Image (cartoon, rainbow, N blue to C red; front, side, top):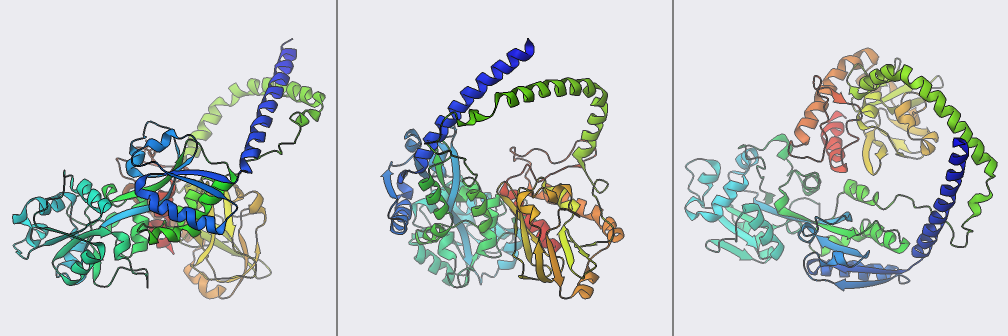
Length: 562
């Protein structure tokens, strides 16, 4: 009787779910064919949004975009499921609303000094805290370099600020003031402020990052350097605060969160739900690729390549849509007898498993506890292969080709790999250069080749099942077969199993140090990556972190292992 009821209820659920799915898919299919996009924008982003709409309309005249200026604040969020372009300020007013959102660009304010400032080296060692900046603005008697450097220096500091609404708003927020004191502070157009700092060795200026970037070599403008900010106010520029090498490194650090939040604002596309219209998705894809060039023309900063990739992943998940003409009940051609057999088998298997579960409980509990721990004892080290410090391996086959892949340490660190981006056979690859990318739900790492040579074959099996890199990194999870060009010389810098095992404890210390320095204790959205017992790492420790932490792992862990 119970079996009959179960079959009957399952059939009814199957029918109703099928109807619902069919109706939903039909609606999505109709929606996907629409070529009219409704977009709203807050007033402060209207020029940028208009530029995007105009250029995209020129490239895709068949797509009609309706754009509405909804002023300041969060009013746009009451306009249904339209795409809305807003900045941080507007987004803060909607914290109680559940929104789909993605970052499209960024507006960054930066403090700059003259490259010939006589205290440049000392400033790059100590930096200036937000409190010290505030004192300079409030107290004219302390507006000298001695107050910044804590010595008797009386050379004056002249303050310049770009006469830009967003720049002034950021400075007020950063200094924690009601307004910028007018006395002794010089305001001017962006180019005038930059020019003044370039000529005045004792000047400090605040302007947009885009105003001090060189279009020629993507470096800082001539005679301009960013002024390091001592974010944690400990009197020195720590390793994690050393982010001012060039604009690219600096922008990456802003994304990761190493720069004061008060000095930058993100540009968001938001909606009440994830966009599914084909035209909307295509428009957002274009903004995050070719459309990034319009950001700089409008005075904003484009996203780094890694951040663009992570944002694109938010709209790249496939949506399966049935044809609207498809019969809603076509799925019911499956013989009901198969469904009955399936249910009966499920009942039998369920009873069998319940009988065995009590026997296995203790063993399962122990195995889970062991699997949760990630240390040098849980890393599989295969014999007969060469290991690189960048956590790849190489093994020469009998025919002279070299098989390569990632090691067990790296796969344990990052967790389940969902996609692999590989180079094509025939391409030349060099030791220590980018060989392939491993991706986990939009988060990616660039992996470096342990040897040089020509790619003879790529592992096609990884296209259909990239998890082989996790389950069998030294066998089924190989990535390339390479014809080596300098095998004997290059293996001198690689390690065999015994030496690699001795190296692993050092890598675990380095991984723990990375996590301790990168993840601020006040970042509550991340779970503790350490187990309580002895401070051991959790398995798949990077899996729970966002793309910004992966980017930092790339630059401050993998890149430094090459």
